Amino acid sequence: MSMSSRAVPAALAGPAIETSSRRRGPIGGPPRRRRLRPSAVFRHLGLLAGALVSLFPFYWMFVLATQPSAVIYQYPPVMTPGDRLGANVGTIMEKTNIWAAMANTFVVATSVTVLVLLIASLAAFAFAKFQFPGKNLLFGIVLATFLLPSQLATIPQFLVMSKLGWVGDLKALILPSLASAFGIFWLRQYATSAIPSELLEAATLDGCGFLRQYRHVCLPTIRPALAFLGIFTFIGSWNDFMWPLIVLTDPTKLTLQVALSQLKTAHGTDYGMLMASSLIAVLPLLVIFFLGAKQFMSGITEGAVKG
Image (cartoon, rainbow, N blue to C red; front, side, top):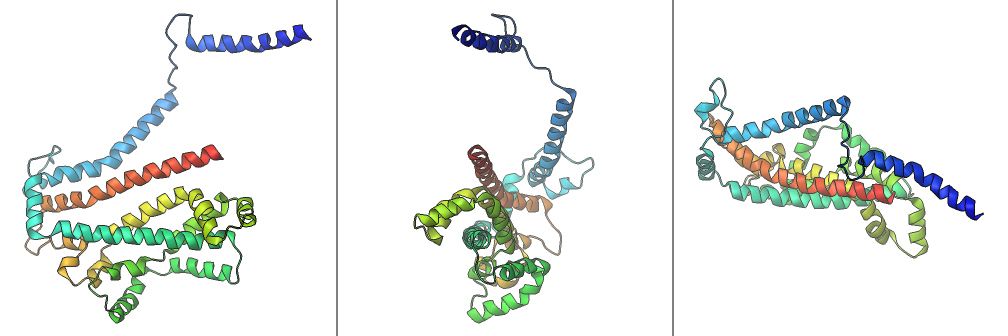
């Protein structure tokens, strides 16, 4: 018994020691480097090329934002930044109140994002894990809204805002965007497979109602999906142009996209100034994207470890 018990670990330890010595190289020597496979090299080169192609429009926008409008028409084009960024930004601030417009846009985008996440997650949790009369019919109606172009709702929305007396106010941008059919569909599909039914049954036995299950079970589980929906909703609300152009009549309450559209004139367009304004508009989106992407990736990693 004792000999066999000693021999088995020795036999098992032998290949492990040999394998580790092969990886580490000779005793006392430096570790051996792993050889790069040609397929891995080409894959990394392809990813690098794709990243450069994706980043080039942002670099080109920055270059044009630092140049006068006359330089933009030169051939070959100028590929290095100039010294006109401060002058272009100063011209923008003289022609439009861009900081007030950015503040209005941030208020609208943040309010819409928070309310969409709240309403869509509540509806998605109910559709995914609870049974109630008319569930399939209501969810079918939500999906049917994808078939209708958003432009068809412009006139009815304007009439409703006019009856409420909200034309020209930022509330007219927030209220029509509260219910997101895509958000409900996306979170419902995610919650159906991500939230275990056994966990909800255990929470019910412990006396947890719908809201406590939503807060303590649903929200922590669907956090990656909420991060994606938050980024998607914020960017869409930040870039919205048609509806704010129609409903906002007060010059002090214009959103960023509407304010920047006033920089174009019938006598010509200063593209250097226009690119500088686009650079100002895109910087907050980049910050929000990187913050949300970090939360999105951490949520996926946490779910994979727990799974």
